[in-house]
Length: 333
Image: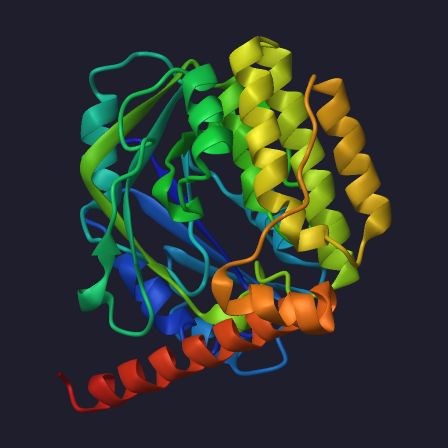
């Protein structure tokens, strides 16, 4: 008999997207599936829309707003599947996503084998999704996956994974303290607990880019900056517990340097801790640089003004892209 796969969907104010996400779960060609939606205290119509899909295979649970990590933990606590498919409420699964990964799994006996898939990003029209292979799009050992993740600044989107229950339990729960990058920290633990990652190239998911409205957007939020730093510390700890070599320390330094700009110069306290981590790794961090578009602002008005200009530009660019894509969607182009 085919093993049961639990498709777990945390949702908060996902009214525009939740129906499409649930439909993509229902459309899976893998027949043995259950779908659990946890509405995390939404203030829009997310819950009522999700409840329209309630059936023998679809459940909708509600809880007071506690964050995405808490909603995911709740969903896992009540699911019955032998395998877990995480799905954010604004993302989509290709119809054969799970089936293709289960086909790949047939060649391996271990319940600690972790499955990944191809993923493409889009704004409103999934047909325009761009699939851009990275150094993670292949079979990898746990240490090689973690190394490339930190060194190359690449990742696997949350829905791209298919995880056995045994491996999920071994990794432990999602960390509810992490308002951002909870997936980065969580899957570093999943990879750490696995015996290897198997990439299924024919398995696909669609990752919706929603700009500053996405929960993962950090901006200038102090709470999110603190959560990002905590996640970074944990990810460095995880990879060093597996291998504390020169190449690992070098990858960790690259990782810290890449994220330095998020904290500099407003959070001098976190910058100081980052520098301490760099010293422990046997290196040091440089003052982050800005592209030519913002460097002149920094020289005239200072770093904070330059960062705000950069954030504003990115938000405006995202808004224009969304508006244009929305127009094309309405015109069915």
